[in-house]
Image (cartoon, rainbow, N blue to C red):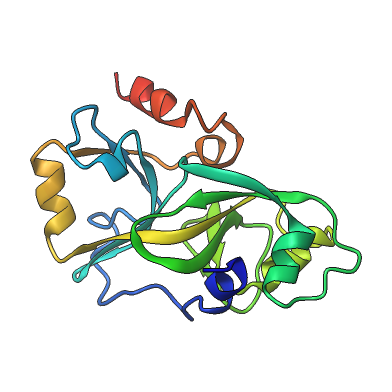
Length: 193
């Protein structure tokens, strides 16, 4: 499937339901795969939880890098005008659910229609126009592009955490945007010890 189809088919918003009390919600936290997690697609995964409520959780894997892609090529693939666009973006596998969907996780200095506030330090924009803004130096200071997301039904994530599959770390923009992608899981694991 082309990148154009991937981004053009992005949902208007993330799946969600009723909000949990703020203390119970993991939104804005980092979910870190334990060393012994059994599912190979989550091996060494670090996931930014974008939404967590009574109906389940949704997150984006932030450290499974696929490639660097010139922004002009990506924009041309989705039928956008790439005139005046420079630079490239890192593309990640955001998760196994709906891998045709594109998401841009970014710093909170940027907002437009389709931007979802995750917490006070990180946001996400689903609209492909964020890529135009990034390529024309009007976008967020920091960003990453992911295809697909992770999702859990009601109580499923809590069960996996109780079984030792995951642990939670406070969200840290350095882990999300700045750390070497090869070291994000190790750095998150080290913080736990």
